[in-house]
Image (cartoon, rainbow, N blue to C red):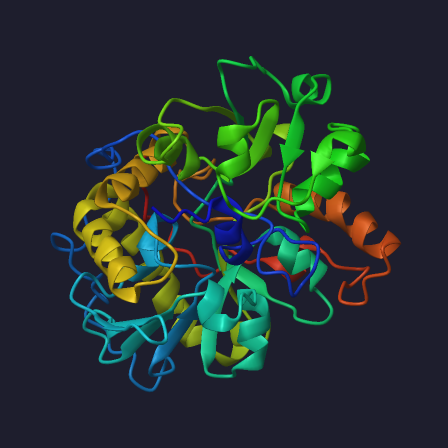
Length: 399
């Protein structure tokens, strides 16, 4: 099995990279099987059994771009399930270009979802949005939005993840870590993708020692399997389940800590648009963002139809990235079991918290400024980076 672990995937999957061109210092997915059969009874039931989300009977012809193009950050996977849910399992795949398209509910327009990674030269969605004026929105993490706040400014309009899935993982037969400082005080080498924004924070705060970190990680599981004393970057929605169940040469449990729990509250792969879209495309966003919210609820309440289709898409793409129906089910289950996708503190899905965004600015802005990064706006504020104005506060996951 070909497995380009979490950060190659991270490399394209909504990255926290320190280099705006870097495809990825952050991403991957998995953990425990079986999605939570309907996120919670309090959640909206929405779309018909695995079908695309409905547009509440409203036409978006002449209101939204047609096709409405969304740039993702990697191959199709459960982290993207809420976006693919808007089309549903009956869409059409252009395997050569990694494009999945189909009707956007009954809105009268077509939606087009573009895979990232090799299909865009491992360029992050933020760069793609500015390189191709036809792309309406894409995925961007808060750290990336801060880093590119002057050169490639983006505004988050909805976040699927309330807690980022990125982790550090290890062999529980060798180590028993309870904190990141325990990792620091051990003899472990920490493998990560070069350019990871979280690692700048970890080193700056003394959470890890510079002498123990190794930026040579390339996504391969080889060193984790063959060497002792390895801690490795990953995604809670991918590696833990895949290493235990699918990665040849391992197939036993791993343990992990969420990067979020070290005081790095990054919003991973948030749906983002150019600042001018807030005014120029306001009517479209007012109708569209609640549809993304509802699609998120629908997907998590009944993930199996879309997860099966996502695996079919990956198979038909016939590239180095692989998946399985079981790993997709496990990834969706992990989102719920670990509280990665929730209604947050407000009782509805998709919102950003101002204090968390300010915390990310306080962490990352000094790093980028000290580095002399010309892409960053030294006066960036949370209001520059997100808005909750298009969210429907009645759409809840019930968690």
